[in-house]
Amino acid sequence: MSKYAVIGNPIDHSLSPMIHAQFAKQVGLSITYEKILSPINEFSSTVERFIKSGGLGFNITVPFKINAYELTDDCTTTAKAAGAVNTIKVENNTLIGENTDGIGLVNDLCNNLHQSLKDKEILIIGAGGATQGILKPLLDCGPAKILLANRTKDKSLKLAHKFAKYGKVCGFGLDQIKAKPVDIVINATSASIAGKMPEIASGVAEGAICYDLMYGTRTPFMKWAYKNSALKVCDGLGMLVEQAASSFAFWHGKTPQTQPVINLLREKGD
Ligand code: NAP
Figure 1: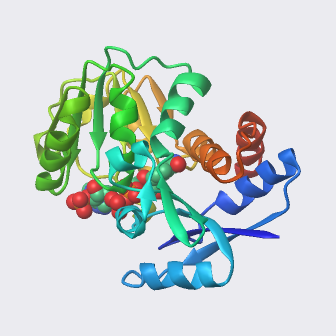
Figure 2: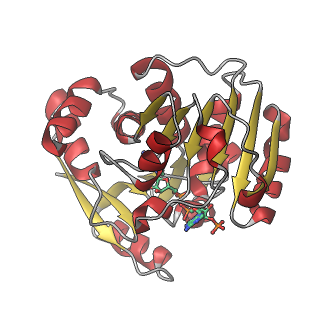
């Protein structure tokens, strides 16, 4: 059986094994897909062990997407633009990196949630590996502007500078977010994992689509968005399934259906 995995820290919460099992069932493939907890400073040795054990591909989650990019021998143009990788294919002992986070988010926002991004003002909070993956695909949809705010201001400034060639994007610190409403607020911090919501000006969410990359029925960001008069509040389950479908296609050359899997996971979560 072909062997796949997701590597992260923490990893217990990951739904990826269930999603890939459903996709494999849909297209009649026989695979295994496990969760691997990597110690923070041992990502490359964790990868090495997995490959030695016969691993053919793996997903990478918090906080290793940038380490994963550095480990690859070659990358797709999407992954190169991102400088972060969430999917690796092992081919003839070389590691080929891809980043499917951006296409996953865009597919969920545009196809599943029927939102247009054209000419919209989008605020992203967080400037980690996930943000690196979503910036170009979002800018490719033609928003008016992307505002990029991060706790460590320097990181958002650097990312804004790096992605400016793809569209209008400006970086600043979380404390510089204005109370003025935007069209879409995306939470790309990992604060939700620790049950936290960063302190930001609440007026920014009024009448906005608020989207948490983290999934769950009521994440701290979602509670904050409801409390601050958001128009629509969404978690990242749809994105999770969409990015997994693109990873699956990258490995197996077959595109699975996402909606039945999203529905199944929503039912299980109720
Ligand atoms: P990461 O590379 O570790 O980056 C974490 C980001 O969160 C950094 O910008 C960090 O700010 C910020 N942060 C962490 N704790 C914070 C706090 N208490 N207050 C303010 N900011 C805080 O993680 P990542 O890979 O970008 O992932 C981010 C989130 O997206 C995670 O929740 C992950 O599960 C989710 N995600 C979901 C999907 C999906 O398919 N739905 C896909 C990708 C990622 P500093 O730079 O200041 O440290």
